[in-house]
Image (cartoon, rainbow, N blue to C red; front, side):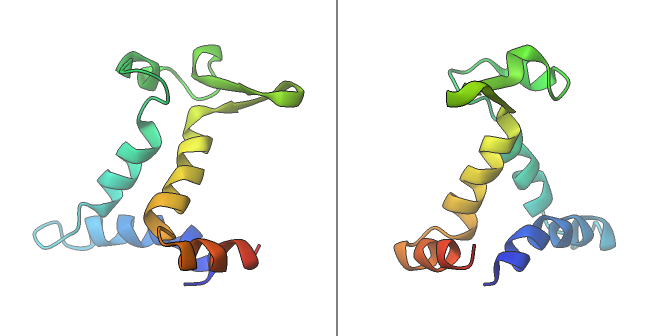
Length: 95
């Protein structure tokens, strides 16, 4: 799977959801839930804050601050889209 397909997959999930709800997929909902899960603990209230809110930010070395959903997207790619060692090695080689 090309890196480009990894980026496009959620859009395909959205299309599958809205194309025909009677036979649609729940993959888009699963993708959104993956992005929205809290990084630390079980504090679901953080998910209801707007993106970029200080309580949603993960502080990284060098003063870098990222919304937790960005890190969740990286985890999504690693765990769901390229889960095997071979897939992960291939993904990293295409970057």
